[in-house]
Length: 249
Image (cartoon, rainbow, N blue to C red):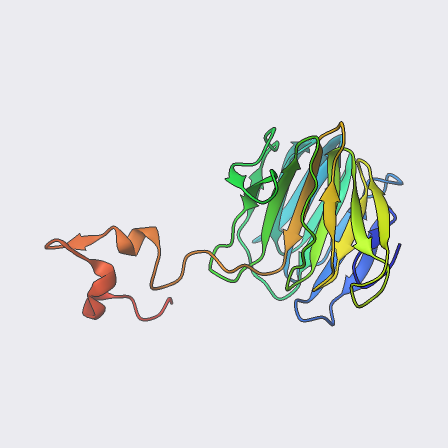
């Protein structure tokens, strides 16, 4: 299915969707489905998730090659050029963002944060600064009937465990009948901005990893743990303008 509300992506190697001309310039890639190595250029930051198998992530920095082995359920954030080989998974390029290098996982059995309608969420790769992209793990226990909703920006997801379905409206304007889209492990999808959707489970759990290109939480230069919890004569450094760093050089 390919609509205003939900786009199913066939898993494959290489670029799966070019969204570089959108509000949040993004490209979606896959690797390992035909055994080829995925080589990605140095533009932007790459968020990746290992759907199955064992994957080697090779990063290039200051003339050095750094190699890390990840297993199923692990994830990464790599700024600059990276090569990915073995196993299979997805990589999402945030083309205008310079992120931090990070490797994490495997994901846990359920989310750490309460979400909606019995679902939970974990922020796997948080925004470094408020507004930055992030990577999330959404957990849906059996018997979930989620409220129909939208998001203000694109969502890119992959089903990593269990099964369920997504319901979207038949018509572009959000009206009409319901279209039911089965969700199974390995399925990749895109939810366009303002796309109406809701997720459901019956007897099985459902786990999804989802990329968001923006965030409305996170540290800022005026509000972060280090500045807030540094005190001069009992006063937080956040409140003492004359000692605040004015720029980063």
